[in-house]
Length: 416
View 1 (cartoon, rainbow, N blue to C red):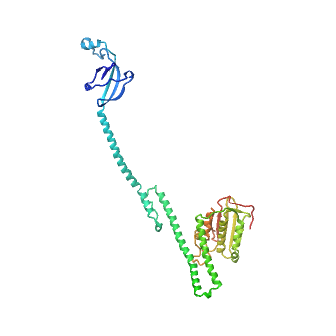
View 2: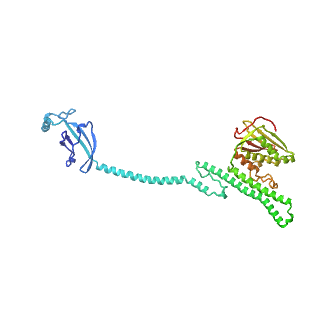
View 3: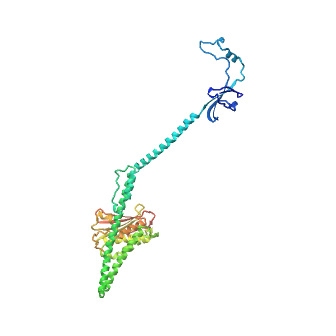
């Protein structure tokens, strides 16, 4: 449609002869074509409006053919000669967007439908992928859930597992090995405890029955034997309670400066009679005045148990060597004693509860808890306790490592 600047319709398309469109507003501001949408008589239109100048004269021809004035329609010539009312015209080209809107709406619905279908199938594919991807993990979890105290020997196979789960299977197998070892130790502990308590309890029962049947034979020796058995049972119970307390960290620590030399001398004096009876030679090399900052009661338990072990298991005419090194590198207290019939295979069992080299357990004076308690006490004080056998299998060395270099001090050196 074409308007004059005054808004008069000059020409309109035959397709809109029956429609009337409003003249565009603000045509003075048209510096370039303006695109816009409008609503007219219930229908949407998209239009472009622009200004242009009225054409004057005849069209200029190009080429060899020329137009003579005599060949021109006189009506056209008269129109050209007529002065125009206005040089500027306003044109508008519009198109009904109903068909395009229908297409866009259909396309929108199609996109939404495709999105819903794609989302549904994506959900199914993700579920299927997760099910297949997590299948090895589910199998591993089911195998782990089936573990019970009677199946601790089970190990998880890595054959059907992806490489990402192989480290988990390795750690689980290591955990199973530790659990199995722990349960074996607990079962062995229960068995050993029952074995250790069975003999003294049986003796008490027998002696009580004899005392009831023949009361006239209840002399002083008989009562002393009964008291010795009761003391042995009490010692066993106290040792087990202390062992449990130290292993569970229930002991309240007290830090004091303890003279190492005095502690060792007190321990040796306690077993002096036994050492002399077996003609054991004792060699002590320690810095005078050396002190250790630790819990005195627990540390004395460590020293006394190690010295008791030396006095008990050193053969006749054997040797006990004690050395305390104040070097900033070593920080070591070493207690050694000569041994007999000791092998390297026995060393790992020394700290086990109720373990004794004598399989027959004929020696009732020791219950096999001393070194277990010593290890628990050392752990409670954060001390390293190691044991090793000499190459000739003639000496066993118990070494205490002071992990904290500032834990002890000394004033001078000398042999005791």
